[in-house]
Length: 228
Figure (cartoon, rainbow, N blue to C red):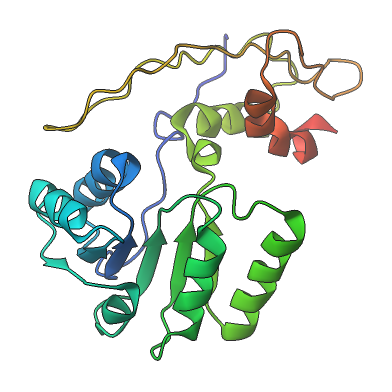
């Protein structure tokens, strides 16, 4: 667009001032092995240790990703002073109980990183938020697409006053794999919503071409000032 220049780094995250906060990981599945631990290593975030209900699996993942310690149980990991953040990557039905075990631990951590969905019922999800707030423990749900490079770039367009964006095409192909990553079949899909109608300033989503989950990824844009 003539006269319009994007910030070439707008899609990149803002790094915290300190990256030395220790992370303890609960779970040893594919997401932990080939996504979380790889991302922490690339970002320079220290992972203190890992625990899982299957000790051998936790040991295998720790050896593959260079994690120094395997804890026999969550409670043992919470006793380690270097663990300040707990990354919880377990099935949704098990996640609320794990979060509550962290809160009940003898030593207070700074925060929990939970996966979506936070719980299988809205009432329980709200209860977890309230319980973490009362305990003074931060709770973050891993809504990873909100911080995706494409969404960050889109937000910059909206903030710069672009009122009409015809199409957003985001191919979903196999992710970049770390060495030793397990091959998994990933379906390709794309989303092409029409955003920000020129007259009303609100998006008119092409619901036939967008899955519910795809629309949810962009739902937070509905309340963006540029869309009103």
